[in-house]
Structure formats: structure tokens, C-alpha cells
Length: 427
Ligand SMILES: [Zn+2]
Image 1 (cartoon, helix red, strand yellow):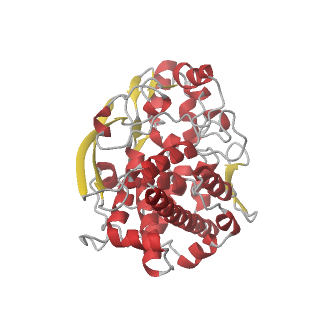
Image 2 (cartoon, protein in one colour):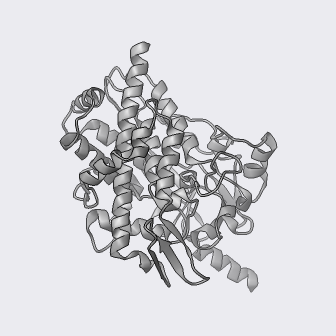
Image 3 (cartoon, rainbow, N blue to C red):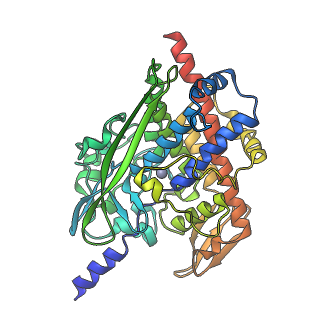
């Protein structure tokens, strides 16, 4: 009987995937970036040249660079790059309760609240959480990370069909301070509860380097393909979810503009305070849903299923710019931390910088039952459940984080364009 109960507990609690900002919000952040570039700012000569090149085919009254970035930023959450196994189903790369989420999003964390064990700062690790809510998942008995299947952890590519057209970035090992044996133990032998995943700046830097190394496209190109994502669907059985992908190249611009999208996705995720604190629980999905509602100024969570299938029309949600505030973007852009950043774009430092600002908004429990959030100004709101986040002061704070994601994305986009052009002039 005990075993039975255990199975049901596990099945019902497969509420995972923390995807940070949901696809809808990532999309809106880039739309805000382009609105800003088109309407507000004295754009640098490089950026304005890029914008011109991206305007070659005004199919959607939208810049082609914007379309490529929206697509590549959203697809980062639909890569089956992290595999796990449990005694009752194996292997799987994601889960579905209402919407699909891939375990890959566990690479989208940078815990700046404590020094790292294996990197300067570590990524997501069960051992750094309190093991409740969404964070309980990795702690379940028999749960293992399958490094042998996860390409970024050095394993073989389990299903490479989905990778057609995408750039291989290699293993996420930059800056790893442990030994070969530690790596083996973390991802190939130990329980998932013992694993410490790489911080998101590792992947952010690798994607950025792939972007920088890419040549200038000599023609316009579009490729499309379908792939199926292997997920646990809330029951014992595994199922495959179809996802449609495409990637595009623009004549005169870097071939790997989509790799820059990967970096921007990870950067934007760090504007979500949980991602900067290594927490998947503590009202994390609830906050993401509130942000979904806020960007669209809607009473209920907008339908996200179009992102799951990969057939989304970039115009369908264009009205969701409710959190965008250009004056706030300006003031964040003028803040000393961004102004102080070196001329050469150091992805790691930019990531740590936004994560530290983001982590000033904290989440936790006052006691076993009481959820609490502490805003950067010291205000504490607590209560029985995540409805504590439905508070005007929280909405304002969420707005700040949204515009911080816009400001940092703008900063990286403009610097990246400059750096790539400088490199390509020298060649
Ligand atoms: Zn993400």
C-alpha cells in the first residue's frame, strides 16, 4: 500500500519545468527592445545598419532580426538537452501538466546567493534549495541525471533529429573547478539530488562565442523542420510532443544570429529572481503566470499552447506590451552597473550583474506553512499561499524586472553587433 501511495505522490507532483519567463514574456521583451530601437534611442551606426539589413522583406511589418531573435529565444526552452531517469519511467527530457516544459530549463539558473562549489557561481542544485514545492523533484528517490544521454554534460546525443540546423555548442564545462571524477560523479553516477548543474553564463558564453565566430551570410535562407520532444505527461507513461522549428539567415548579417538568441534568453531568465537564487519553488511558476497576465493586461493566463507546438504567429500577441516602460529602460541603462561594463562584452560579468540585481527580490518561508516575499526596499509580504504575489507593490517590482530584461537585452544586442562587426572588419 505504501508503494502505491508513493507512485501516486510522484505522479501527481510532476509539476515541474521551471521555464523562467514563459515564452510569451520572452517574446514581449524582444518586441519591447525593437520598439525602443525604433522609437526612442539614438541608435549606434552598427545597430542602425543591422536594422536596415533586417528590413529587407517587410512581410510582417516586423524586422527580420526581431523575428529570428523571437524564434531562437523561445526555442531555447524546447531543447531536449537534459535527460533524467526514474525507476518508473526512463529516460525523459521534460514534463507536461498543463503546458509542456523541458528539463533543459534547469541550465537557465545562476545562483549568486552563495559562492559556487564547482564554478565561481553554480547553476541549479537541489542541495541548495529547501527541497519543497517544485524543488522537491530532483530529491525524489531513484531520480538520476543521465549525463550519458545529455550532450551538454558530455553524453551522446540521444535524439539528434531535433538538432538539424542548430549549432552544436559542446559540453558545458568552461570554468569547472572540479576533477574529472567529480564530473563523472555529478552527472553519471550520483543521484540527481547530488548534482550541481553549470551556471547559465557557461552556456551563455558558448552561444555568444558561436555567434562571434560565425561568418557573414551571403544569402537569405530559411529552414524548417519538425521534431518530437520526449516528455512525461503527468501519468506514468511517456509521450512525444511535436514541435515545429525554423531558423533563418539574413544576407549581410552573422550566420549564427540565432546563437545570440540563446544568450539573450538566458540573460532574460536571470531577470526572474528565482533564477538568480537557484530556486525552482517558492511561488516561481505562480510569479511567471502573474507576469504573463500583467504583460497582456489580462485577468487570466493567456493561452501558451501555440509556443508548445512551435507554430506561433509573431503578430498574434503583439498587444502584450503592458509592462514596457521606456523611461524605466532608460534609467536602468543609465545605472552605474551597465555604464561601468567594459567595452569588450564579457557575458559572464553581465550575467552575474543582472542576477545580483534580480536576487535583491527574495522568496522564502517564514515557517513551514507561511510563504513570504521580501522586496528590495525591505517590505515583506507573507501569507498561506502564492496569492501574496497578487499585490500592487509586487506588480511594480515585476515591472522593474521586465524592463531590466529589456535594458540588458538592448545592451547585449548592441554590444554584440559592434563586437561582431569589429571582428569581421579585421578579417
Ligand atoms: Zn529559460
